[in-house]
Amino acid sequence: MKYIKYINNLIKEKYPVQLEFHQAVKEVTESLEPILKKYNKYEQNAILERLVIPDREIFFRVTWVDDDGKIQVNRGCRIEFNSAIGPYKGGLRFHPSVNPGIIKFLGFEQIFKNALTTLAMGGGKGGSDFDPKGKSDGEVMRFCQAFMNELYRHIGAHTDVPAGDIGVGGREIGYLYGQYRKLTNRFDGVLTGKALNWGGSLVRTEATGYGCVYFAQNMLKEKGEDLEGKICTVSGSGNVAIYTIEKLQQLGAIPVTISDSKGMIYDKNGIDLALLKEIKEVKRLSLEAYAKEKKNAQYTPVSKYKDGINPVWHVPCFAAFPSATQNELNLKDAKALLKNGCKCVSEGANMPSTIDAVHEFINAKICYGPGKAANAGGVAVSGLEMAQNASMTPWTFEYTDKRLYQIMEDIFNNASQTAKEFNAEGNLVVGANIAGFRKVADSMIDQGVL
Ligand code: NDP
Image 1 (cartoon, rainbow, N blue to C red):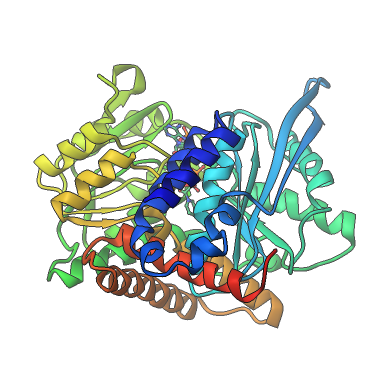
Image 2: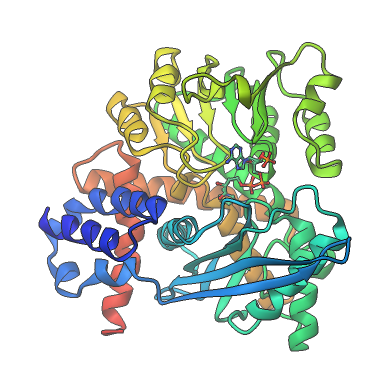
């Protein structure tokens, strides 16, 4: 379609080196073809042009002092993409790979993901090329304080509400929140992922992983299948991976892999969750430590990965849960999964599968849950944290978990029905993208030319 080609060329011209952003825009816009053809109001109102250019891009310097007294300088940013249906909402990523293209792909995806949750949240994302790995708590604190010294001007409970992502967990949210409170003299729900003592929500820590498994359950239920007794593969070993594994084990499934940036573990008897939590949440070590404790587990360092393939996806499984990072699952990996009988892929990470891998899953008609639907549980419980902060009433674990399950079921039903409405039955990429887009685009039209 001419309009879609025009948009994709436009962003390549405007932002030539932002490859991940090009990929995310291509994936979304191509799946919107049926709705753009059916209703010309979106092209008439220049909705895609307005969606791919963020409302605001804020870049800043972060200067802090390390433990040796040396001055360190990092780059920070916050990209406020779209607030047509609520305040900007999306995580902060601290990782050396962070650049404007990565933050923009994440912010763009967030617009549609947040719309799918049914909660009033717009889309945004931010971060820094700061690497918390190997830093002392004092260094992380000083960096977070310096980061907030600029960010506080741009955020607020009704303006922009950041959260965690790769490299930003409970420790970082604590230091960021403390500095926000100090600078503004306000105690409000300006960040989510807070600790329970000062405004956090039960289930937020577990939400993305649990939600991703709930999404898989819903996809499988429609085909008369479930996860009990099934071998599953999981990548990553951070927040999303850990709570995906926890929920899988609660349901009687057997997750057998985990990975990090240094290597992967295959533990055929099932991942030892207590050991994994101890290594990653408490000691912050690499997965080599897991293999040292568990002699039967097989450890493969990244240096031994062959031909650009990720060995996690070459372990036979019934269901796969990519939960590390973008583009960690390519066409070769997708083919290996299908050849080995994989029936379900539910994405905990954002855009973990390359576009040709996604096409492979869709063509094979397996249950495929794209990240912006399958991992929306994290931001959904962040929305529930905001609701609890606003009403000054904490909810129980059981109630919040029930709300999370209900939201994931609603997202699945919405994506599935929308796919049917546009003659793409079973294609949850089309269904999720159109459902999220329609809500935001119609709200933009209602609110006039802005
Ligand atoms: P964490 O920082 O807790 O964990 C990230 C995990 O992925 C770590 O095991 C890390 O290994 C690994 N990893 C990161 N980058 C790479 C890389 N380039 N190559 C190989 N492994 C890598 O992050 P989260 O678990 O929070 O996030 C994981 C994914 O889920 C991301 O895509 C994120 O955007 C997405 N997501 C997270 C949500 C949340 O609520 N946390 C919500 C929705 C999506 P190492 O420790 O060695 O770096």
